Image 1 (cartoon, rainbow, N blue to C red):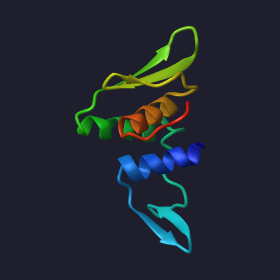
Image 2: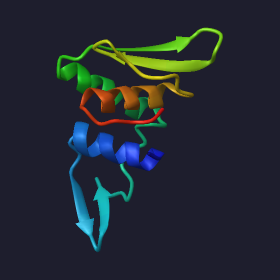
Image 3: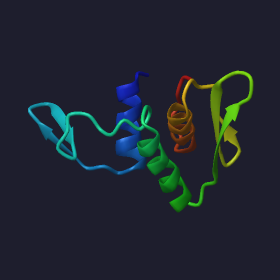
Image 4: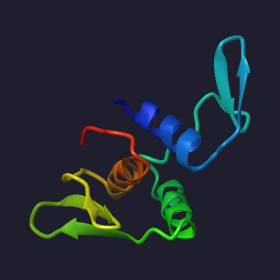
Length: 102
């Protein structure tokens, strides 16, 4: 699963972002690509807020000495990730029942 696919899944399945299909290309809020949930911490934090609104507790942590990130949502923990946004996205996808690779 590449970064764009992760961002699309987060946008469509969790954030409920509307898209418009024009000649086979999906536009999200007027852009070809959805927000960069997996790469931008402010966009990823919107995911944390959305999960919270659904009653799900999310904890993001930096693993000391490894420089890696993990995210736990209601006890489900991601594998080690290079960035906090990616850890958040993978935990969110796991929470809504979409498998992933870390």
